Image 1 (cartoon, one colour):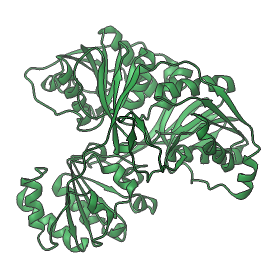
Image 2: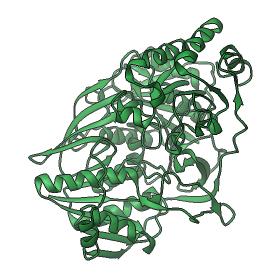
Image 3: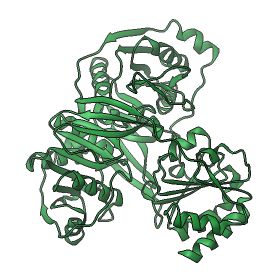
Image 4: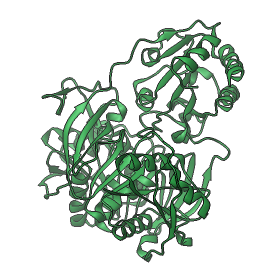
Length: 317
Length: 245
């Protein structure tokens, strides 16, 4: 099986979720090629050999430095044909998922998004994907000769391999019709760990009583190397930006550890966190429904517990 | 301007999920169905654009006759007419192929839907429709204005926002806060009863994806409670028992 992985770059480096996509591909086959677009450097790209990539195809055309969905899908399709691939793998994101969907149409491939574990290799791949916002799974069979799979965080374990990947530059055929969308500008939180990529998430709810109390959660997040999140009411009230809203209609996270502070645990919030490996709930109300979904719980005043917890973690880290 | 809003008919966000028939069918017993929450935002923005710029709004659902109350609700919110493609929506590609077929007939300037349906969470129908129609697609769109045939948008990206523009026609996957959800008023509900609802047959579409079985996650073990004055104990458990620190 010949696998092509679409890896996303952030400031020239391959994103951690894309490295999981390479690991996913490597668990299925030894023949793994990675395609990247935009600005990067040869050394970072050849370093992808460590995760199992044999070859990296690098389309460094300037027009591809911004993530234009249609153009990316066209380039990936060209590379897919050029290397005679059978399967395309990418990590779900606001860019990669629609790119994969468009590529699946161009390739007339079977498509599954939100895939949560590595399937058994075979002609027809049977994949497990998350549905009902993490409340259930579906096993589906991808039966077309070509397949496109996008994976959820933690779908594959990243293992280190010997060797480096060969890097090959690629000049794709670009079509003006693929560049009708113009990206004017972007705003991005800098110096923070991004919520969808974080291994640990510290989230606050209405129980934090106001945006002025977020400092203690940010400090806890800092010592844990965690991202900060929040409940829907908190982002609706403008205490925190929308991209931090975790839940059914916000970001769905799948960290190793999710710490919820002052969040009662409405079913819509749980839908965004139910893929977390371990959940800690801190709430002053012993009847908060979130405790039922938690692994560990503390009933008490967050304003007293959080600084103590931060100190206790500092002591062991 | 002609706007097509594609809506999914999905279980209410508070629904308990169960399966029947040896885990091959979603159990609808006691489940309340709603307009998909993301699609509801798309519809609300379409109705606002109709009011501010003048537009016609058609709502489309791929579903069996059970979904008609959901379409009537969308008409009550302010859509002008409705189309139901009479078929069980089996997967993203099937749905995208139906939308594309209807869109070709109707020649719409703007095709809106939610960023994803909350039942199967594919999150790809907008991109597939765009590709099938040869149009650009953008998702998840959190702000949308139309000025002189150009859509000006903000899209959520990981950790922030991206501002972009593109000429119509365009396919968009929407999310909050593109508009506030609209609640139908009495006049809307009354007029929805007589608005046109056309039923059409599906076009063939083979996605090459077959459902084998559904699964529920394993039940969660009991929560371990730790006294508030023993936070060190929590840290010890996270490190040694859960092994997540």
